[in-house]
Image (tube, rainbow over all chains, first blue to last red; front, side, top):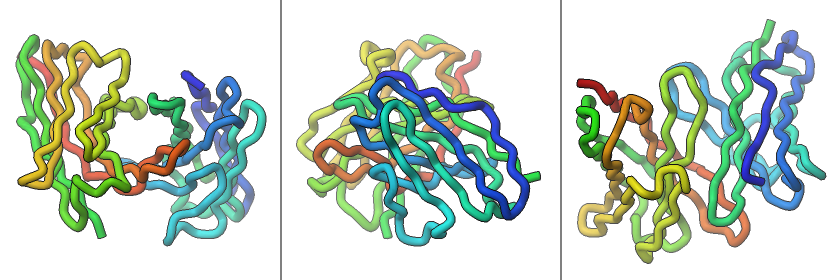
Length: 106
Length: 122
């Protein structure tokens, strides 16, 4: 997948479920990763290999990937989850990032 | 716990060469389980992958930057570096170094530096 498309923004109410999509040609045939970036900070890995959570990432973060779309889901969204989120895939040997989605917790 | 720290001159003149170094602690750049990458982020914009290097010295570059780019390893000082030639204002960005597990058909970044802002301006 040489290009990954994300919605520019997603809004969610506290306690509700947020879903952020990432679309790319045959993305489901690759592994997707997701990063959270808060203002002025480096990105932090929140999901890798489609659905695995690194140590220290809350269980409310989950991921899936099928067909042409990978999805990051945040259950019971908290105010602290407000950030930019980026998807990433590896189209060997090239690495591709999505354009990013700003998650607003209203 | 691995730590990565970028260092660079903050201001580069147009047409000159941009250089950034990433000092690694808590791991070795000769660790064959990881690749060592550069990613940049222009102010207010998204992430752009620049390239990565393996402990073997093999490199892979973003095709859009390949003609101007060199990534190298300094094993004796446990660091890796980026050089980008013929820079323009479009190369102004926060430059991040990152570590990526080598897992066959999977590549991602599990540790990042804090980033360093490089501005191209006369």
